[in-house]
Image (cartoon, rainbow, N blue to C red; front, side, top):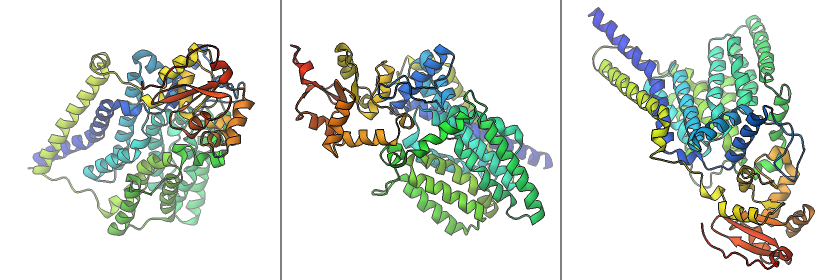
Length: 501
């Protein structure tokens, strides 16, 4: 009887250990299957292009050399390591490379997330939280640097939360995580900002003497973490570069991923907030003030910028895990049916891990059956071919076409690097595109000596240019429309008719 019970514990322990790997393998296979959905943002183009430049020149950029509106202006890449990784995989496997790399990052995020939750919650609840977190983040799961940094963010917050739960200081062994995060994406500033609230949680229930000593150690850890963030080729400039985008003011309200959440129609995020409230009421959770502040912070971030919803999705459960676990402690291991379920999890986990490993190591076989392609509405191929034939030099381009133009070695008017162009410039650009004031459009066209425009087919500016003297529509399809100056269009060349790609 004793031996049988010991075997049951061993089997279930093996099952619990396999669950994070099983979840990660499942996430990897799913996002590999829907890989085209990861290729929907033209920022991926210029991220890869910069990575290629870094590899070719064995140096990092300090100024802009991709636009004709800001040439030579100071600019650093806060995602240089991610860009290198994307460039290497793209050169090796075309778009399958970034898709596989992104899918691996999501898989690692899900696995680390479940592993951290597993210390406090039952397996089904940990897996459910992981599924909900991925669902909430779907709108922002793209082949871009923030996804490569996602597993590092989850691991870092897990380290801080674990230390706070145990009323100790995080081990300095984990400081390289901050250096890695700072090299992958500028969002590392969130990891630094969270040290303070986590320190408050760590000292919350201690007596005053212990509070002072522990707070001092957390302060030293925070200083060390800030120094670790500067252990990149850019040094202290890493901190400045990462905070520049937070100073864009009004501009953050017009860039889609920086817009506030919109509850005009029901969304998964709205459901998550309501579910969070319902969970607290149903379970009767009593949280410390620092934990309440953390949850409010992550909720505010998601409400303020939709790109922060994944932080809400993955980090709120980490804050709630211990209180939830105390309300519903892990069941004791018993004999009988549970060991059968554990064996089932073990077998399924092993199969999924094997399938994921086979897929990742057999890329050429998989590619022979499926080629990943970038979304068409971000890639105006035919229009850009025509502009290159005409040798257009100064193109007034739509914001979403900037990345693709950079990939074609064409200087851009504007692209996704909003921190380079600044709030005033990009706001003037958006007002011109929306023709909220006609003078904005005509002024920019003249001020920057624009000889051709490349705009989204249904944009207001494209419609207005049809009626502005001195400009003529040269080409249009379902993706983009080109206008050129009348004197250039009247050289004897017959304008190409509008058609669809």
